[in-house]
Amino acid sequence: MVILLKNRAAIYQREAAEMLHNISLYPGLTENQLCRFFPEKEATAKVLLAHMLKEGRVFCDRNGGYYANQEAQNGADKDLSRCVWVLLDFIDQVEYHTVGEFPAAILCFANGELYEIVPIPQGKETMICQLLRQPQKDAGKRIVVVDDAAQIELLDIPQVAGFCTVAEDGTVSYYKKEAALES
Image 1 (cartoon, rainbow, N blue to C red):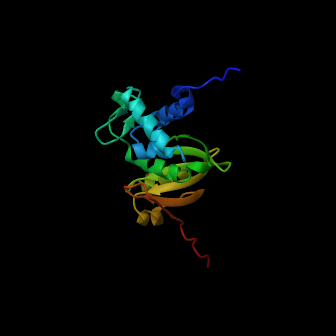
Image 2 (cartoon, rainbow, N blue to C red):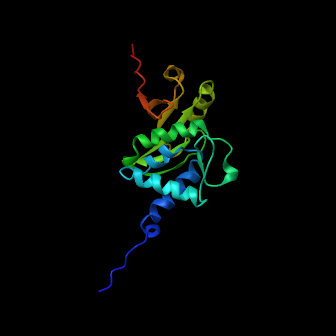
Image 3 (cartoon, helix red, strand yellow):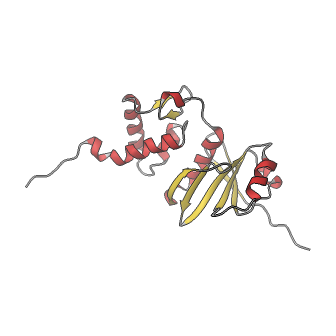
């Protein structure tokens, strides 16, 4: 009887492909963010990322952001990074995720439902609300990421599952808008 033993490359092939895919989808993410895509395998993901960096398969800028190629290192998108923190908050329930179409930064399926993770920077509330109020085919539930909780009162958006803020360390705080009382 012959037993086929797999080498390290074969064992981590799926994880390596997923890591490269995530770096390509979401350029500029930190090591912490990239490793969180692999719940319960974060240590393995960290070793894999270091190996990919050493082999020249990925690149890291001076701020710790990872990119699929050197040309793409033009600075991380702060809004995308905050939306990724929200995605990572429930990654164990996510069946699929990808980059969204403006104004949604990320689209994901979680627990059989479509979610759009939408960043709304301060000063852009009116413009993005106008876009999101227009009828959209197949629009999912929206998780709205704001810079400051005070922005929530300025927003009137359909299909909102919740609002959130993201701290510098990636901590996500969730909010719901209180329903107005009808008289």
